[in-house]
Image (tube, one colour):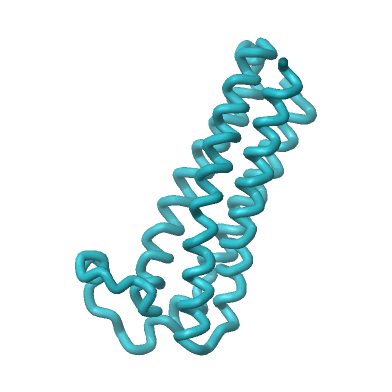
Length: 160
């Protein structure tokens, strides 16, 4: 049964990475987009991919925790470091990306809900240009990419 549990974990990781790749590509592409309409379309595409991201994350976690028990890995430090790294990356990415892209969606006109717009306050006419020029997407890609490499290294090499 263990190989199928690991397969569930790997499928979840694949779905997570695939959906997240859409958001990363959009985040980096937004830097070169000049029209509000194109920015809005890209932000809508990214928002659509987030559903797949959460499905993948759920499968990844269920499969990983289950594999941890089925393979008797919980006594090894590598699995705890991998899980801790995932938690740190998730918290950091959420804290850095969610307010930024929530505001960007409001600025680009993707968000029309009055409650959502009230949360973001006044929007300056040039704010979309300033947000697109931000280095935040690059930092998010670096944090996520390096974190993913660390987790894959821990799971494959099992150094401790």
